[in-house]
Image (cartoon, rainbow, N blue to C red; front, side, top):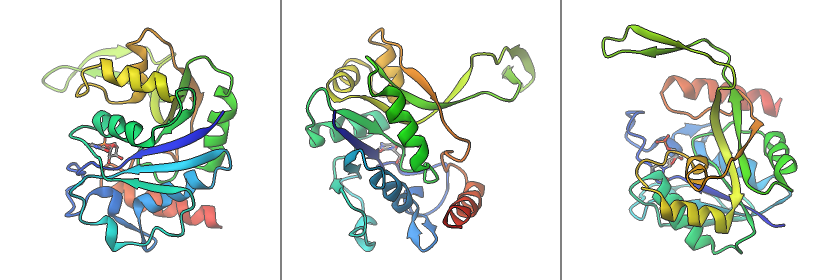
Length: 227
Ligand code: C5P
């Protein structure tokens, strides 16, 4: 089988409140998503790393990307994450049974080892799956007044991460079916086909940079890795 990475990076990063989208925030003198792409390209099994940016992206060309092997850039980002992935899949034009690993640009601390664990676990899987973490904290459901209305049993609850790995043909079909604006990850589109993606243990460091405070943590993690 062949493996390709697909990185949607066409978001505006509105929660972050910075002038540039969060995927371009500076981390060790490079845009945040440079680190994301470099990790995916460093996985030997991955053949192509397809990046999806917005057609109106004014930041990409200001930086150097030549040092990332396997990288191909598609300016086909859509209005939602799912739409960006759909357009990226079309641009990738992979064979139906090629595996595609969709990974958030903003998860810049992903390790090569976690990607290899995902690939090794799912190589013979009929459906595919995703990195995820078992919930460690007690989970509360809130009412409209932000008071606890219930304690949700945490056993068998997982937090979805990325990469999410599915066959190109299956994922294309799944995304074409669903209402694209309610799909927050690829797995949920696959679930709507009646399939059950497999959960593969991810890692805490593979969090999504969402708030300004996350940047300092990402920086510290990348520093320890370079050791
Ligand atoms: O906004 P959020 O953090 O959920 O975005 C997850 C990923 O999807 C990010 O890498 C973001 O750039 C990407 N995205 C996209 N196209 C959109 C919205 C988000 O590629 N229209």
